[in-house]
Length: 217
Image (cartoon, rainbow, N blue to C red; front, side, top):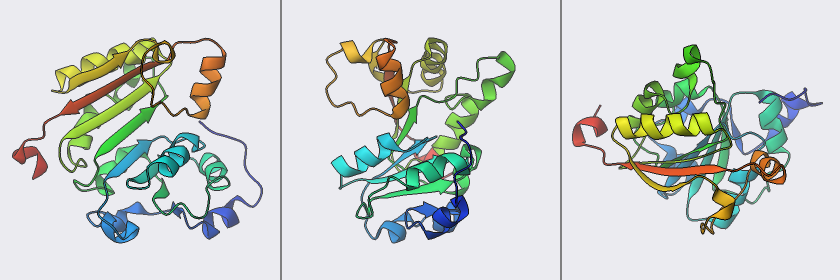
């Protein structure tokens, strides 16, 4: 997702206490950034940040990190973040570099309304492709835990197969989240828009036991 340039974008990004332009400096030592050892949850492609800001407000015992590669998008997020949210930060980066930023430190990854990359030749760009699942092996602290929400049925079906093939166990799979009995849902901007249009929201949780061999890679 890209947006038109924001006036004074560079100044806003420079002065924000919630933005890191280079997350690599905290690889393996994110506890020093947050000054605690609380669990770390990461949203890849956080957009304008509504989901993660609300999550950080609701769960102060968890540290939240949002990844976004476009300046014009992340600056919109920074304009909305309350200054007193000290369990939240954002990193401007490409998700392909995730192994360079985290070293077996992440407890949960959120994939909310990711680009479906529908063409066959684009498969490697999907955030649940084997390429990315292999990268996630290197960032999870203990057992792997992925939560995905999407409005795209093809991407959802692809994810179900890809995650299962890679060794994940699927839990709480919903083909219509807002007509299910799931009660702890926090919506992103995209989700609100799709719900208003009457489109079903697909959701899954996937978990995988990490072997010692994988953890030590």
